[in-house]
Every structure is written in structure tokens, then in C-alpha cells.
Length: 234
Picture 1 (cartoon, helix red, strand yellow):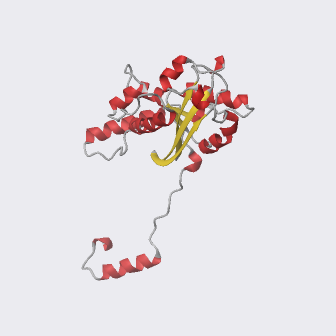
Picture 2: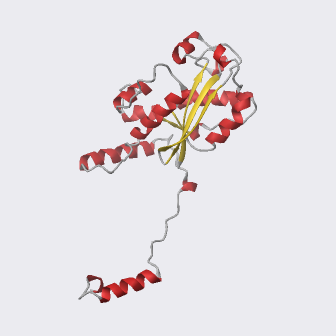
Picture 3: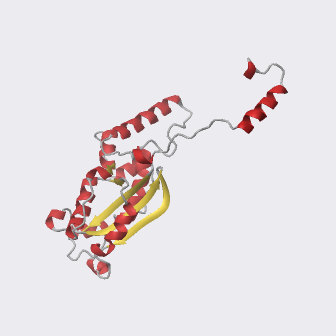
């Protein structure tokens, strides 16, 4: 199962006010394990950046002056994400910006159902608790000391670790404590029931046959002949 953990940085808080994407960070998970493949893009927004936004991510218009515009990187971006689920913290925010950019270049928008909103999952899993990325890193003891400013690829990497923990951890169901196993299973069931969690049924592997071959059956029969009253013949 392939998923893309994604984050963006922008010139402001709303695409309806003409704000644009200036950075995209995306990394690939296969069966909830990072593969090492990622996409990191800086984008010239062709407009100014709000001071409040620069205070958050530290990106300036001078830095972006020689970077490509979105239309020049759109194909690369769309090819990387494909039709796979997009794991995003506060998905409605990033999806709105992505779709505004796609609309601007006359490309089909992405369906919100393609996204998995980790913010919604965290709020359901820990009602009443802080659910921003820093708070979740503290909860799961994920080191985020290198995150002095927001950055799309840095945040995508942290979110990938948080997402795995929200699913029950890197090795769900393998704990020796029965009560812990029960809690882990419950946590996974809650995530699966979340409406944003999509399962690609088409990519589920068919059950493989494990019947013994004729040679294996023959070898087994010879082995039984060497035993006195084997239980397999009772």
C-alpha cells in the first residue's frame, strides 16, 4: 500500500485571498514504512508573502525569485503523488491550496477523499488534547528539536512518524502484554473507521496457495515410514 505524506508552506492563510504555495514536501510510505523517496519543491508564488507567514516558515520572496512557478513543477508533483492517499495534517488547508493551484493552470482538482487527515484522527483519538504537530511529537516522544521553523519536508518527515504512531506504532499487535495488545488493536480499529482513511481494494494481494507439492508429499510419506505409529496416521 503506497501513501504520500505531504505538507506545504504558503504566502498566507487562504487561497481565496490569492495566496499561493511556495514549498511542497512529500515523502513516500510503502505499507506504512518510509521508502526514502521524497519530493521537495520551492515555488515562486508570483506575489508577495505575508510577514506573518514568513515569521512561521522563514521563506522570503528574494529566496524564491529564481525558483520555478507552479505550472513548471505541476507534472513532477502530480506524477509523484499519483492517485495514492495523501497523509496531511489539517488536510482541508493544504488540499485547498493545491486545488487552487491546479485550477489556475486548468488541471483537474484532487478529491478530498484522496486525503487522510491526521488532525481529524488525532482529535478523535485524543479528544480535548492539543493536536498540532509539535504536541503530537511530544506525546509520541518524537524528536523535533530541529524544527525551529516550519518547513514542508521537515514537517512531512515528522508527520510520517506521527502517522505511524497514530496507527498503533511501528509494530502494532506484537507486544507481549495482552492489555497493551488490546489497546493497540482498538487504536487501529478507530483509525480504520475514520472516513478519511481509504483502502485501495484493487491492490490487495490475492491469497497465495500453500498446498504441498507432490515431491513434498512423497518426502513426507518416506519420513512417516521411519516412525513408529506416527500421530499423522492416527
